[in-house]
Amino acid sequence: MSTLIQLMSKNPVSVSPDDSLTVVKEIFDHVKFHHVLVVEHGVLLGVISDRDLFKALSPNIGTAAETSRDLATLKKKVHQVMRRAPVALREHAKVMDAIHLFNTEGVSCIPVVNAANQPLGILSWRDIIRALDRTDKAGEATP
Image (cartoon, rainbow, N blue to C red; front, side):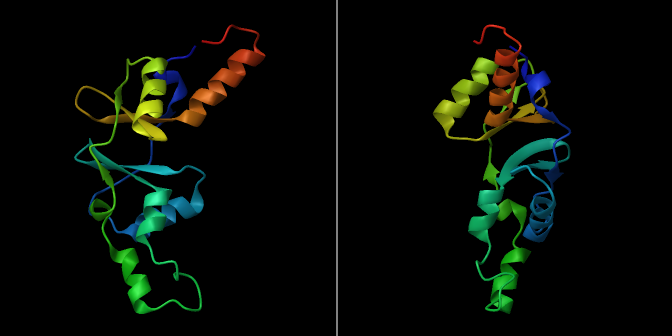
């Protein structure tokens, strides 16, 4: 099976802890992924998912019922909503380490970091499933 480095999405999108949720909403409105890393001075501080954003925003945004109070939820800062100290793996970890974390920690993505906790990429359970599917179609033994 492939290594984490081969499976992960490289150059993950990141935001600052002081960015507003407007920035995060703009990202999620234009991409197909579900997690953004929160980075400050090159170091991973947290993760914010589209679900975290959805829970933090008023459901009236973009509707006829929208008020200034609803719009104010977009002004919240990332650090108010992000998951702090996210589960992460070092770049040389094994795929089975990632599978174990997915099964035990209830996360759907795992940042991959170097020794200085600087993000190198992000791994989702879908990345592993995709690799297993390719392996199976190639006629190789699956793990």
